Length: 345
Image 1 (cartoon, rainbow, N blue to C red):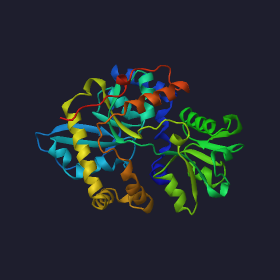
Image 2 (cartoon, helix red, strand yellow; image 1 turned 180 degrees about the vertical axis):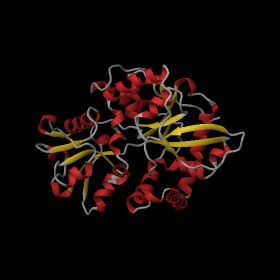
Image 3 (cartoon, rainbow, N blue to C red; image 1 turned 30 degrees about the vertical axis):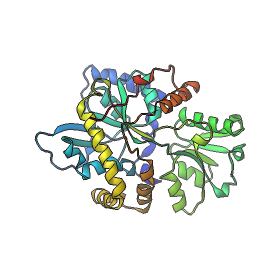
Image 4 (tube, helix red, strand yellow; image 1 turned 45 degrees about the horizontal axis):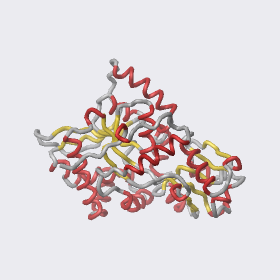
């Protein structure tokens, strides 16, 4: 399975669980009271910055992969330097840590996923969305042609594998109901992120949580013919796949605005020079030089937000309602509690 399997992806989306977030809040409180452990991570090598550059620390959601191309492009193209920034990018050893690190003021920015924003807000973490990297959903419900499933209705009496309890099954239930199938007529099986293995070994008939730019391509590489159903076509509101969060107290710091401006320049550079950036990417990360990552690199180009500042308010409030209606969160706070739109200078 793509880079997720290679890098123990079980934790990558597990931070979306409300239960784990409750534990994170308890740990955060202890952290703020005196626990000063530093994030165990591997910083990505960067050029030396000028002494006048402002230091800014960015925590990725997990190990480096093609979803981070615009950030790496901003560094490679010199955009961060032009905006007076000395950016340190850290790939966390434990992806559950970045939100807590941001809340505790241990870093300036961290990557996370839109659905997780509501869980963090529900638990009172003092973090807020300030920018977007990928502004389209990547999640799909996937099966393979030899399963005989051609429409959502064909899932009746079948098994669907999932990884994230609560969110994944809410998405599946919504899709089934939209297609006129009772969720009671489908069995959900926790496959612990082994999505492709569970599907190709016929442990399940379909999987939710497969990514359009990774697992779907992995299936093709195995000689399988994927059949996919996108949640947004079956009643689930679309979401931003990858967003930046900051501490609420620091969200309006000018260096965060400068970072987003540099990120926008990096996105433009990536669009204009995708081959050059792929070559730079695999030079820096030769272990990721394979067909699957290369396919993902080019396929993901169309998913990056051209303007990282832009906040689609309706999209965020619609997804909040979805989370609330499915009892994934206890309250519906105002948008400004968990997402803001900064202004470019």
